[in-house]
Image (cartoon, rainbow, N blue to C red):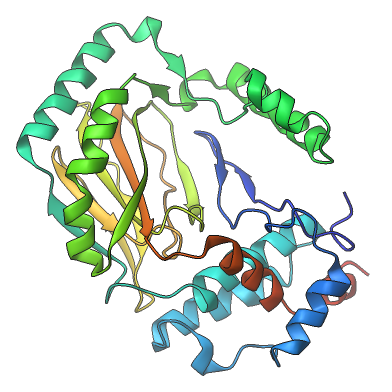
Length: 329
């Protein structure tokens, strides 16, 4: 697919040592958005480039600085798909998405009874580690997925991604996390933790999913990214446990003042964060046998995901590919 004519079905798939990570907005609701239509919508809104300082949300000097630097770096990406997707992520994070909290992240403790149940399931799962499945970002083995996407224009690209992921797994099997079945506790966590997320964010939320138990293994890392903008608005990482002989493994996260933090979680700690707005990751490789967390994701009850997705596409400057041409040439 030529990204200079079509900008639908766009995602960033960053090859990290642990997985293929989705780090941008989902495809536009129309699935295929003509570039001419996108540019027309840009001008209809009287957008300018570069963005005015007043457009950054929140409008703090540090937040503006960190994203202005990212935009300058994006202009040097030589791959057209990569450049467009980078603009899309930054525009969403820096300009289009509202912030619900003062700093973008915070720490609290999860309910002890829930943590104890999760930790027990984790220990039981680790005792039968040879039977656990490796987390796989490729979905092409799913029959329903095949039926839905086999005729789409993106199937070839998705298949290439599947092959690439499989190659990485064959070459570096320990760098992909294991998954411990946790369906009942996932649902319990999603419901039980909802009031905590609502109190922290100040808005009524709808639960999207709880995901785990993910078990990272030795040499895992996670590149800096933001999460799915349609559903992962107010989120948390509940740390269930880690190898006591392993080295501390920091979560790196940016706040709304432009500061970058390293956060070290212990069992029962819960990091609350605006996960589709604050860049976060674990860029340092883990040195230990296992490290496990549960992830929960919520979105405001009145969240208009499709329109917000389109607006982020519209905000990308018409010159995004012209600037690329100048660099490449």
